[in-house]
Image (cartoon, rainbow over all chains, first blue to last red; front, side, top):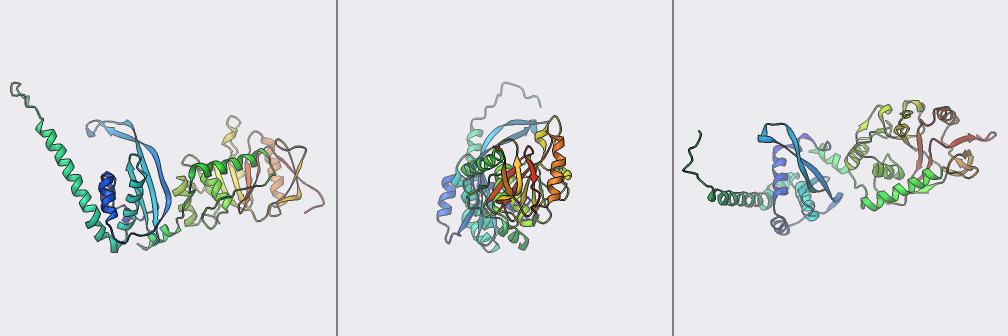
Length: 153
Length: 205
């Protein structure tokens, strides 16, 4: 963003931004509603919907190509303490983007980082891992082994 | 931690309703450009950077984006103003006036030729300058004629030196190349596109 110190472009921030973006809105909202003493915030940039171009590389190594556009909603909020939080989520759920932005801002307040990590970020990460594992297991269960065909390797 | 906090505290919201507010500002500017010398007011409540007038902030938020490099006069280019404009407009703030599509100036420039006047083939590439001044009056020593003005109209910009009008008149020889001007004071603005002829009435100022 250019407005952030290098400290806040840290891997730790990348991790929680990613978890907030991937979380299902219902999970995020219920955890958010259970959070005690929520801060007051102002919308520095109200939630807005836009498009981003998703690019890929064939096999992760080939030439970059444009895969297609996807909808993204973003929001930026400022806390009274002056901390600035950004939320970027896929889809068009403005509330999701706003809650993600407020949590991002809170995570930058050192005295809140620990509690938010335990009450929101960690549970969301676990749920995301679980759903991934379930999906992988379901996919693995349907794997077909062609015993009659000799494997080339 | 401190540096981030101070940066963030300086960052205030832009348009609260981007669609209708940017259209409102665009309409005001369009009216100002279509009727040179008429004073238009941007009746919006925006808490922009301290160094920028409301009208200058509003025009910039409405028009400037990542494709339009912006020049800020050194007196206006505080960290707060730069952070605000970079964040809300997504623009590049440049220090070389020649490359600017838009410029925000603190009073008239000493040398207009430092700005881009476009080319014969693409005269629309000429810069638009937003010039912050103290006072805009409808009665004054300036007589305006040209497209958008029936007969002539009067304008008073007491903060603008006579030498600036001479320089501008010289630049008009290169039409269609040229520079468009918007003078702003607080929430008020008055536009002088490159087609408007300005004459300083003798005997006054």
